[in-house]
Length: 285
Length: 254
Image (cartoon, rainbow over all chains, first blue to last red):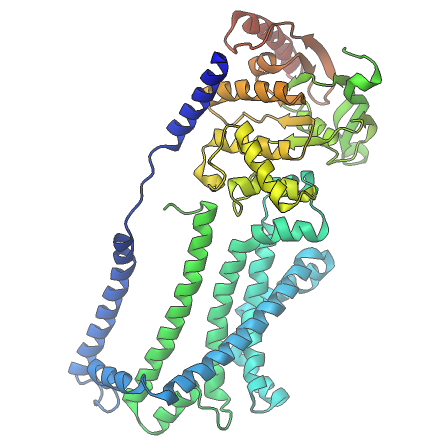
């Protein structure tokens, strides 16, 4: 039928006009765009450091030059004992963060679902989030003595509130029209959470995870310096030992390692966050 | 009124009232609204602001409880579309249609086939793997229509579905909606504040008063289809309806 083909063509034509041409930037270009600010940042920091060393503000055995620390890094990084320390610390981080995610999710969903709970502990969670977790250490040591559990306790307390808050905020801000659609489609109970509330809350939840990780990492480093469990050669213990031995290059090498781990994990979270936002169409590109 | 035997009636509203709040501050949104919608009929519901058009559709969809009266949709399945497509951004275009099927308990493979078929119906074949944000407003609204059809609804409630679209897109979507309505033998309740749109699409235009919403008048549209929104016949009826609407609005200014 002629009228039918006419209609089909009109619709297709309109769609094509409205979508417009697609532009795609190359991989190399995107990589360069993401990399050069980081390279510049390193150049600035190392340059400033070198200048301070050259000015002889402090003796070189206290404040070594960047090249001296780099030598130390090159020596330390390939050793097995270095990787044992990294594994030990990252294992603690993973356990603590994992526990915090589990607890944060349960608390978050419970608070978002039940009104009385929200009134009771909603603001408490925000309060805990602003609290420096190092405050908990004396109590943690009393509770668990000098042990892995003491460190874990503080890491979880540091991270869980952010994770719970991210989830609560995500659930609170699910747009009402989506909820109406869910109602029309007949979503109820668990299905409603699985197919609507949780996916809709995901961007906010990922932000919460990212923040939670930052708190977990800080708490862990504080913990490893304060709670030195005998026999466990963690990154924190290495830092403490370097200080005890007046080994400034070694100390700075481990500071740089801590920084690098922080940056790498942050890159992973940012990539997840960005991928999510791109899928949702919240960012261009 | 097109009242036939009860089997010909898809939706029957009898003395429907809806008020919000209680006591002296209660707001009466709808007051004693009664009309029938015949099976396969396209009814436009028209009114100025505050006539409770959207409320009416929510009630028919069963999303809100009535204050008084009754709504009988027989055993028809009812679906509702809004001005915003309200697609889920975490799902693909096909996924947004499949979720409606999934909630009805359709198995995975038939789900895929049905979704592809429905994309075909709204002329979006090949767009199934895209994300909603990659489509234009008109295309998204067609996905929302496909999702509503996926519920296997034969009564489609539409709440100003083309209100946010430009004139050209709207014009083309009128043709599309008319085609799908006829092909699938749907019953449509179409809420709008655009008089010409109401006349262009409806078998009948129900005019509601404002605050509270009451049925003011009904206009049968005895014009052959397909109509054009800019045809003199549509314009003529539209202008007489507009006169009524103006009178209703100025009543509130007195």
